[in-house]
Amino acid sequence: MKEIEVENRVKLARVEKGLTQEQLADEVGVTRQTIGLLEAGKYNPTLKLCLMLAKVTGKSLDELFWIKGER
Amino acid sequence: MSKSFAVDERTEQLNGRISFVCLMLTQLALVGVIVYKRYGLGLPMAEYDELNWLVGLSMGGYWAARLYFNGVLPVIPLKTLAVIYVGAVALIFIPTLLIVGWPAPERWYEVLYPFIGVAVIMAVYTLIAYFGKRRLDKLVE
Figure 1: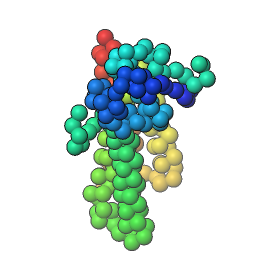
Figure 2: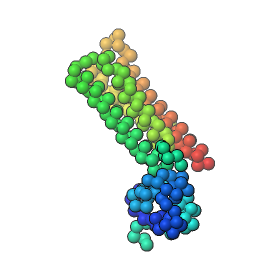
Figure 3: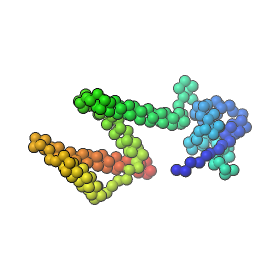
């Protein structure tokens, strides 16, 4: 499969929502480290986690994640 | 989420990769021990037979499980299987016969090894391919 780089705006969405990494992690059911790595672009989340993040932050998937160079 | 020993999709993915690497290293180490015992120390096979079984079961079990759960092996039709069987047996049997010759009469059963060996390998392949595909088809349904 072709390797693609995914960029995200999870940190911005989290801060806008007034949540800490720990709080967001608890809300979506992962560890704080996972949120940290995800925000740093060093972890590709599953679709399930993406949907949970979109739900908790009140954003759409499009707003949170995109393929590098396409925005 | 539990703070003491938290597990999530990332850690599970990572655990899987680490387990894979550790399993490969363990298998390689076992093969290394077998090679050393055989060629380094010149010991007879009886001295490390249990290691042979361990490596065989570990590698066979690992690949069988991986192929079964991935469900990616093509199911080969019976006719093609028969052709492959005859070809594989001939490929092993004829050169062996030409090089080693017929076994002694008291060891006549050694003639059957290529026939049985190829049949077992092909049967295992077919079972994994068939049940792996059936499992995936059921999941898709």
